[in-house]
Image 1 (cartoon, rainbow, N blue to C red):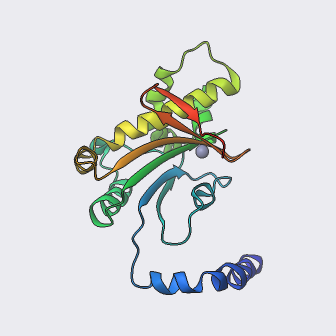
Image 2 (image 1 turned 90 degrees about the vertical axis):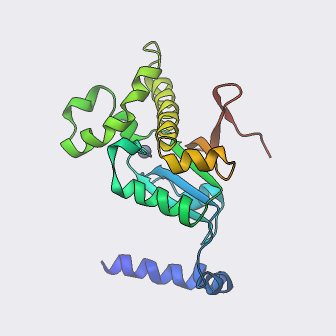
Image 3 (image 1 turned 180 degrees about the vertical axis):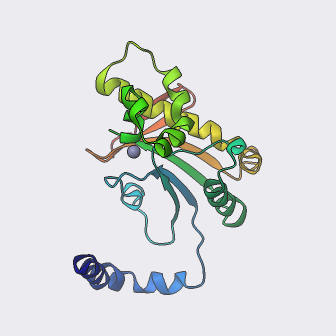
Length: 202
Ligand SMILES: [Zn+2]
């Protein structure tokens, strides 16, 4: 425990002094433009992906960056979506999968051995398995499942009436990404080509 508390002191000594003015401003309230929906995986740091500072990104994280459909009545997810879209009026929702996602790996052969809570949760990602050709194997199959899952979760997002309405009114843009933590690269879904494309180089 002491080590954990010590880590917070180090953080205060560095980041907090640098951002003192910004933090004083944020006392007035938050106005993030982005809702980031990502996996709980410890290798992923949303603010690092987005180059974001405090106050810029509202966040929802869970195993395999899942959004249960509205019909599932998941109150935790519904509350975050409602607050972000209807109260904070975020302009963007980013659903971000990531390379080597353990949650998506668990959709494969080991699914039968999963603990019940995980098995129930991953039901919302299972449609991804129907969208990936059986001919794909190994990491290629995993990456394809990760991409397919992001698109499944985007469809689930649109099952919430207020999200579909905000998108139709052009108040909200929904983005489907996959982040490779090994190199920091983001693949972005391009609706025109129906594929995930690598971001252009700087
Ligand atoms: Zn993951």
